[in-house]
Each structure stands twice: as structure tokens, then as C-alpha cells.
Image (tube, rainbow, N blue to C red; front, side, top):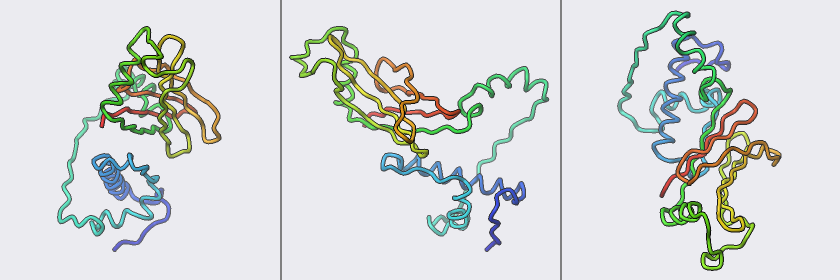
Length: 205
């Protein structure tokens, strides 16, 4: 048993590395078990430290006999080399140049996904044959992010064809981002708002 410190800022470097290791394991377990599909989302690292860290460290909740740690050694570079080679990429990269990155996955049955992509790929459709109504929303899928923002990914019918539309709404329901949509579902759709990157992945079931 250890004496818990309420403020992460008071931990030593070694203790912080320990917390980060188990927090990473906590996130990885959720990815491996597809917990996001059931509406699960991670807590912040400070809440993890206060509520779950001790259990993970002692393996009491998971019945784990052993913990294997993989260590990756990264060779440092000089500041001048970093600036020339990595500075701009880090500045613009989604995981380093923004405050937060949220990711959600929408799972769609393969026959349904194939049908959507078929409709999008056609340049001209017989709406009566396809059972479609002009200027309407045919299908709509929503991804809810931990900060309250929601992304809608929609299959829409125009007057002669179908197209994909994606919109990000803030926690108050205001439209805040309308990115360019892919030509078919199955790719990532990215939204950016308030220095945060939101990623929606469409996954075939």
C-alpha cells in the first residue's frame, strides 16, 4: 500500500511514469475489448489515478499474475536537429499540435455498408426503384464524444444522386464544423473545433 497524493503535480518523475504506464494499459484494454461500442469512454488521468490506479497496480481487479512491461528506448536529438526535422510536423500533427484528440468508431453491418457505398458511387439514381425520396436524409449515424460534442454522419438524397454529409455539433447543439466527406464510408472523417481533433471511424461489422 502506498500513500496517495491528491495532486499529480506532486508525484516524482518515476511515479508519474508508473501512472502513465497503467493509464496506457487501461486505454489499451478498452481498445482491445471494443468498449467504445457500448458507450464507454475513458476518465481523465487524474481521475484514473484517484480511483483506479491502485487496483491496476496491484492487479486486484484483473486477476493478473504477471505484468510484462515493454520498454522502448528513444535516442534524443539535438534541439537544432529537432527544429529542422520534427518541429513543423509536431506543430501541425493532430496528436501533438492540438489540445486533445477524441476518437469514436461507428459499426455498420456489411450489407448495409455496401448498400450505402453503392448509392454514393452512382452518379444518377432512379429514386423510385431505390425507394428513395428527393432532398431527404436516408441514413444518419451519431458519434458522441466525452466533451459533449456530437458528430453526425449522414447519407443524403439529392435530386438525382446520393452523397455523404458530416457535421460536428458542440455540447449546446450548435453546428461548429463541416469537413469534406470521403467518397465512401469506411474511411476516417476528421473534425476540428476549439483546438481539438475529433475522429470518426466507420467500421464494418
